[in-house]
Image (cartoon, rainbow, N blue to C red; front, side, top):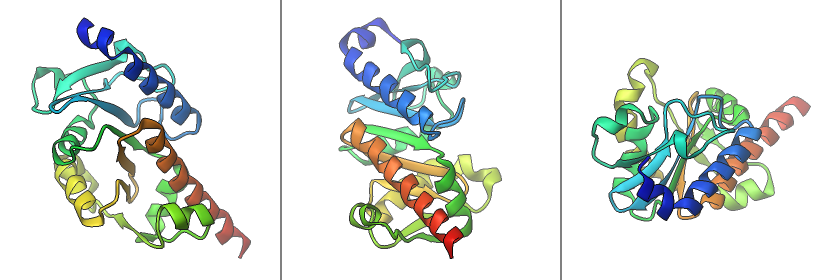
Length: 198
């Protein structure tokens, strides 16, 4: 990452590292699975590299990119095209995360919609949330940036639960973004436990 970005955006970097660690501890991000980014300007963002470990994110494992692909994208997360597409489509997207919380992924495999039973899930997520089906996993990464961006427009929400894949979310505030992912995971965990009690 260039020195200018480190100097001028040290608080952003600290926030990304702190939230990444918190999400890792909650099992939302894996050792090498997941991604987190923050917008620096209209056409620039910072994202984890391919080699990032999310409980030890640091300036060395973050990279500044333009929304248009260039040689630096080779070092960045495999999710970079998806993040870039979301930043281009949504000016109010300041932060983006891709997480794979286990209860959410498990729930998505067995259902077409998420129907919260708990108070906070219903109040903050809604009564019925469609689950995006990527269909063919073999071609998913070639289609993902376009299909995820389109699905955000269709649902008019700032989060997507994707079957067998995880959660994509964006927000103006990094902590609100993390809370959304935690809320989805908690709702899916409650649904899991409720099903066991029947």
